[in-house]
Image (cartoon, rainbow, N blue to C red; front, side):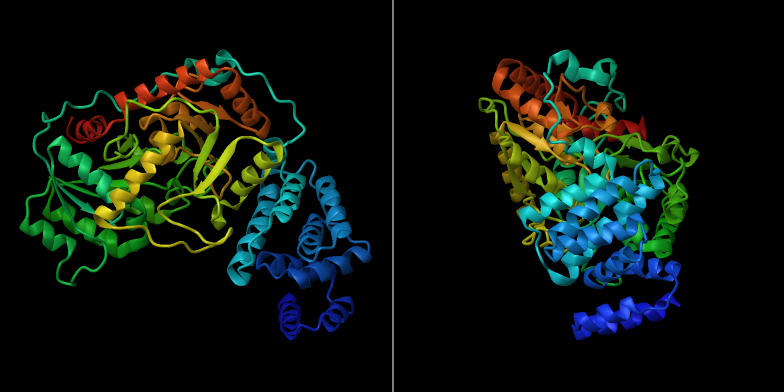
Length: 518
């Protein structure tokens, strides 16, 4: 029945007759349950004005629900009805006290959908005042945002001991000693992936290690030039591709891998996991296992290893199917800059996705640090530029040698910045380890990163980098950089030396070499 109401509301909304739409909603004979389902559907698809009118009508009838409050919040925000917005925020915080994780996930899903749908269909960038109120909406409904962005929390005093925190007893679980360059033989490798800087980072590092590398691109390949036919004509020992390619390719791609397995039994196949949610979208909440992606499970017996670094503590990795198949190490970087390195400067520099819809919540850091007057500059990731603050589409990355030149400029920026702020919280609100986690210290910068235990697999906080878990802690780090520059410089040099020793290109290919051929 609620579908009938939705269709009528959409028709009236298209006529842009607000009074007629309001009269229909007020006179609706649908029961409360049906109207709440309609409200949820409207919000989920970012149809805000009808949702606001329906929520207003339900509130006047004495109905109370967090979904009504969310609609009042967004309706008030985007129609400039500040009293309704403020009331919605107060109601939301009151109503969601004691909510379970699943209930809060529902709230975040609605907020996320409203914002991404608004950006997709209306191409309206969020302004700074709107971001301030949006942050208040998120804080009202989600305790995580309250703790992260509490602008009234006292700024703690940092010491080296306090900054090491739970990482003080960390022993970095490396993949083992890397095989020395050249001792593994002159391996023949095929890289089957899109022609971007990832492919060329791998290629440069493997060639420097002594391996022979060929590219088999994933696009613009003649139909007869299949991957299987390529392997029939050449002696290849290692095929490297991306796990998301396998998953996106479906059963047809798995059949290709099965054929390679039959015809080339000695061939090693390794998949790069650049986004762990390919395996387990809800990193923390889902039960251990990989039931969330049956196709990924189906392809596991066909590959020898998964090379991953972003979420080494992902619960799915505990599944028996992954036993002996995980190489937790960063990808090579096609070299690094320094030493010598420039003198440390206390200002922090962020470079990464901040104006891209899946990471809209990173804009809260930009607004909050500006409000507190923290010395942080923000720069969009150089490989995929976005033009609008919540753009769903981004320009294609460079290919070929141009991608390496672009990547070289990126590394030079990190090297010259001296202090790099790294925001790594993803769409599912979990922080991960990303490329910047290694690029910053490798290129001589002091890394300041959002807290995640996954980082403790690779570095020790307070010794190799600085981590924060709230706006107050980030403010404390900004103060630490100014007031105790010698200690900040000590951490910077220690982290840089550690990264350059353990995560240089030869070491990383050596880890892969030993992992596959012992």
